[in-house]
Amino acid sequence: MADNKTTSPKKRKALGRGLGALLQDSPQKKSTGEGSESAHPVAGIFEISIDEIQVNPFQPRVNFDKDALGELAESIKVQGIIQPITVRRLSDKEYQLISGERRYQASKMAGLEMIPAYVRTANDQQMLEMALIENIQRENLNALEIAHSYQRLLSECNLKQEQLGDRVGKNRTTVNNYLRLLKLPPDIQAGIRDQRISMGHARALVNIEDVDKQLAIFNKTLEEELSVRKVEALVKDLNSPKDDPPEEKDKPGLDPVKKYELGKLQQKLASHFGTRVSLKADGKDKGEIKIPFHSTDDLNRILEILDLI
Image (cartoon, rainbow, N blue to C red; front, side, top):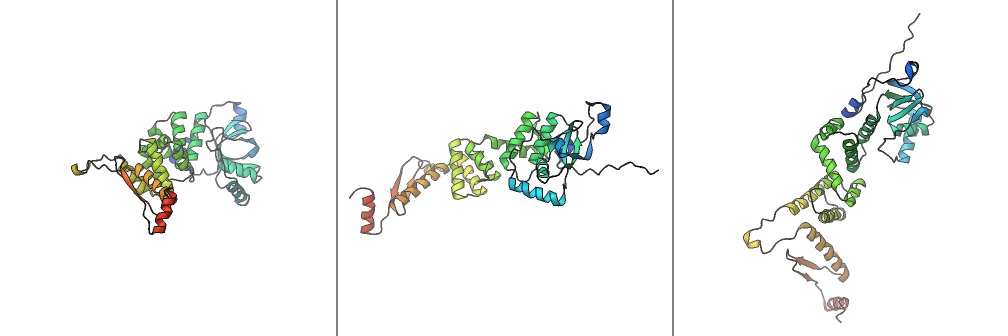
């Protein structure tokens, strides 16, 4: 009689060093008896019913792009599931999603009844850790989302920064650079979230201690579309001690924030008078305003605006 044993499917290489380590099969405590242990998968890759799967309560990702989800559903109808989802078994016919919620949701949209899944063992903390790490490994995350995920791994999974670095395959300095973004004021964090500024811009801004100056340079960056290098230069100039030559000490220069504010005021004056206006000031809040005119009519026009004639 032929041997009816089936061969186990080949396991795919897990994504990421940290996630791979977490997804290693571990001995499972028996909670439903020997009969159910043998009748239902404990660890490996299996086809399981979509209706038996619960979503992950620890999923850090809340919003899914509906159009992208629809495109994935159409692809699944044609190609099927290329990479299995990952679940843990809760009972005989009950599983909980660990990672792969986009594939799971798209498979439901595509009308699949069965879905290939890695069945793993994991406790609640491991569930949270795996979900966060998988979330970090997405390519379209912005720097602030990564920073929040790192913070949750530290606080909710009781990891140290060195352990966190090992989990996500980053060195401690990189991890710390992301975490520092959470110290920025809400307006700048929103700018990172909405991809109005890059990680490089944010790393420069976080080195400014004064919040008002941070916001001033942030707004200047947006309005003038400054490069990362330009912002770094502004921050360096702002933070550098003013060691002027002796003959120049009585003429302190303006810091970048005041320069920015004066520039905005100069633009308003130019718009108000309808001509180019020169506005100069020194570090002692002294200066001058020049309003040029090009003819007698032009002078009269400016005098009318000043309500002098």
